[in-house]
Image (cartoon, rainbow, N blue to C red; front, side, top):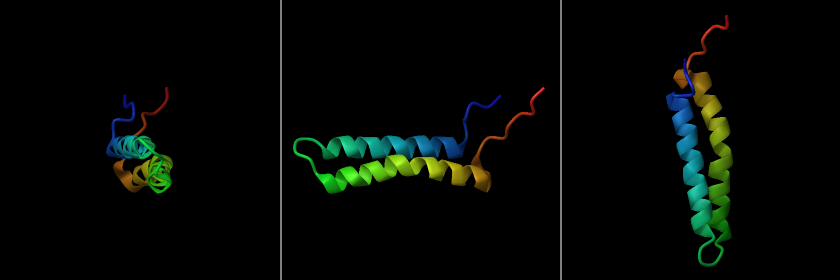
Length: 66
């Protein structure tokens, strides 16, 4: 049984975490709104990236339901 352990899932999670980290660092000590926006785009863009990679064949195959 697969719980999302695929290259597509790992890539989406890592890109999302990088985006979140960049966005958080951009707010310390004074807000850098350009860097914050880049972090937000990365974090939100991870979902379509994971879906595209999954459709390209890098996702986990689903098991047939009983």
